Length: 251
Image (cartoon, rainbow, N blue to C red; front, side, top):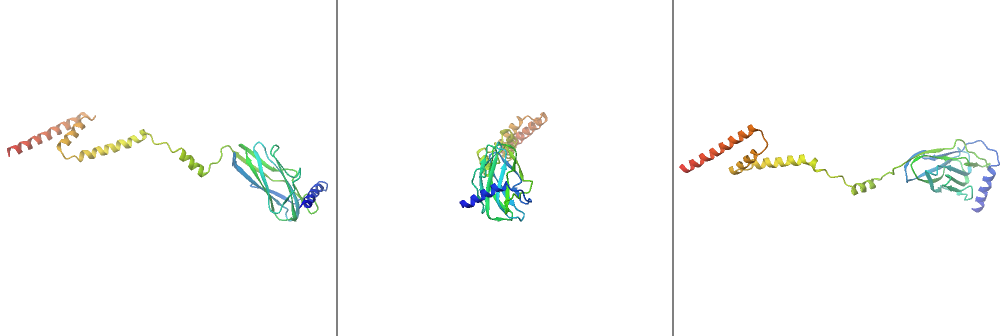
C-alpha cells in the first residue's frame, strides 16, 4: 500500500512535465442545480468518465465561496486509494478549496464515482461550486486526459430553514388556533336564544302563562299598531274568561 501511494505520487509529479495528450476524460457534479436552506447540509457527488480510455489517477479541485459554504467531510467511493500528501489532499474552508487525489488499481475506462463531498450552507445567497484548474486525470502514458470545460453547480441558499411535517405539527400543538371571538359567535347565540324562547311560548298551555308572555311582548320595542292589537287581544281573553266564570257559577 505504501509503495503504491509512492508510485501514485511519482506519476503525479511526472504528469506536469509531460506534454498533454488528446483530451477525452470528463467530470460531472451531481446535482447540477440545487436549492437549500441556511443551516442545512447537502452532498455533492463527483464522477469521472474516461470515455473508454483507461485512467489510473485522478486529482479533483473544487472551489466554492467560503462565506456561504463550508465542506464538512469527503468520502472516496469504491476501490479508490487516497493519496494523503500535502498539495494532494486538503479541505481549506478559509480559501474555499477542496483537493482530493486517489489512484484506481488496474485503471478504469467506464464512468466511475470518485467520491462524495458534504457541504454546510452557512448563510443565504447564491453560490457556485466549480471544478477548478489543478484537476487532472492521468492515463496509462501518465498524461492528463481531461477535456474542457470543467463542470460547475449553481446553488441557491434561502434564508429561512425548511420545516418538516413533524416540526409543523409541534408548532401547531404549541400555538393552537385563536378561539373565535364572542362578537363572531353572538349572531348564532342570539338565533339560538330566539328559537328556545319561541318554543317555550307555544308549549305553555295555561292561560296565566299566556298572559305573562303577552305582557312581556307588550314591553318589546314594536310599533304602536301592534300594541293596539295586543291590547284588544288581551281584553278579548279577559272577557272570554269572565263569561266562562259566570256560566259556571249560574249552572
